Amino acid sequence: DQQVKQNSPSLSVQEGRISILNCDYTNSMFDYFLWYKKYPAEGPTFLISISSIKDKNEDGRFTVFLNKSAKHLSLHIVPSQPGDSAVYFCAASIRSNYGQNFVFGPGTRLSVLP
Amino acid sequence: DSGVTQTPKHLITATGQRVTLRCSPRSGDLSVYWYQQSLDQGLQFLIQYYNGEERAKGNILERFSAQQFPDLHSELNLSSLELGDSALYFCASSIRQGPGELFFGEGSRLTVL
Image (cartoon, rainbow over all chains, first blue to last red; front, side, top):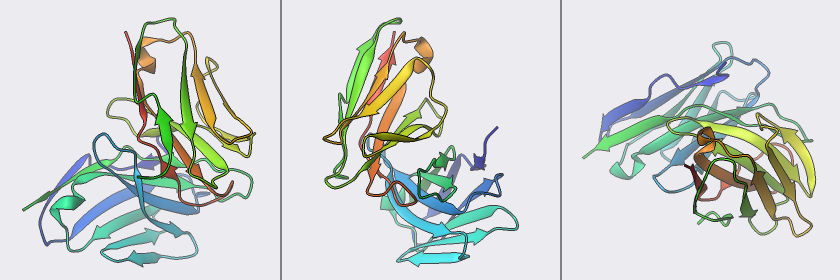
């Protein structure tokens, strides 16, 4: 049973336009969410995070939106650049000061076309 | 460069064998996490250590074990290997045992023939 879902395996966007990557989760106990980007032959790289007390977090071209009632979050990239072409993973966790188990989605492959 | 070092980068072995994957966390990071990524799958959490102690456990098989040593490096031991164990194994580290971003290594690609 997938607790974190990314229903679009791939997405193509024109350079300069907005990329919107979606993520849905089933466990209402999740209260901390992260997005990672992964290039081939490299490990995932942290992009941006959001905790459940917020509904939006922004960092440069990257904005994450959280809709707790819908158990949905999205990553917006504006403007999209060819270097953004990568696989994007959404991850969710239950905050604990003891340990944490991040559950990752299957990823969405973003292609930004020049 | 995330600062997390994993060795070996590639490993080819036969079914039934045992391998050890090694991870050195970023300087100052006390938490180490292990993840498995099979072909076209997401990252599956295996286990977390903080300062030498196990803190969280995911879907780690009984044939797999891990430990974190006093110098904070960690090893993931995979035994009685099966074809389905072929995957990318990622190590990640963070400074805390609780919430915070993870810094990933480049992964160790294991191929079981």
